Amino acid sequence: MNMIDRIKDKIVFGAKDFGQNELDAFLYGIVVGWNGTDEDSNSPEIPEGIKKEFAERFNWGEKEWEVITCMNIVVGVLNNGYKSDVEIEETKEESVKEEEKFTFNDYLVTQGYKDREDVNNALQKKGKSDKYIRDILVYLRHDYEKECAAKKYIPIYE
Image 1 (cartoon, rainbow, N blue to C red):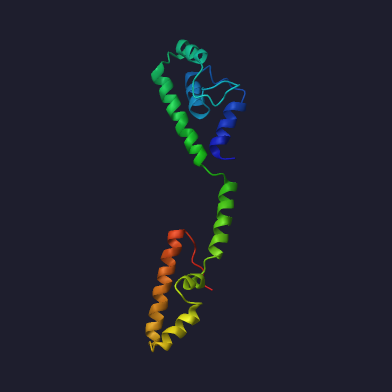
Image 2 (cartoon, rainbow, N blue to C red):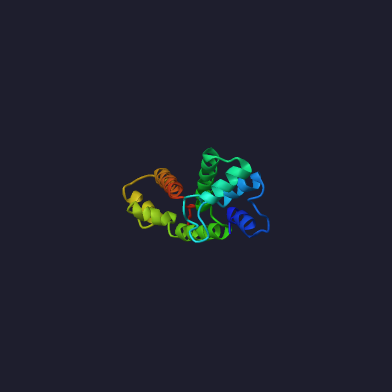
């Protein structure tokens, strides 16, 4: 459970009546929302009875309801994009599995080689110097690291 859900649970399941104090009512509206009823909590409309009660109690008009509704939508969007600790750990585990699948040798295969030894042999056959071969391997490693960064992988050298 993420922090926004925890706050929401404290408000909803607590003993406090958030409709008695203006600040509490405002916070309830932002975090939980005054919209809907018990039967239809997903309704975007705030029941007229609540609007009338709070207009009398706190002198709230359409402007206040608009602010509360907009802020409640923002909290909802933030909460839907917020990952719990468990979800973050699961994402890390999936990411590690993906990273394990894309090693430097895997990258070399995408470049037409079997492995580093194959790069070395191919360039030696062409009569290239050891320094040239090392430079090419450094260049290939650099490209591999750029590709890992683009895919958010951790480079793995075998």
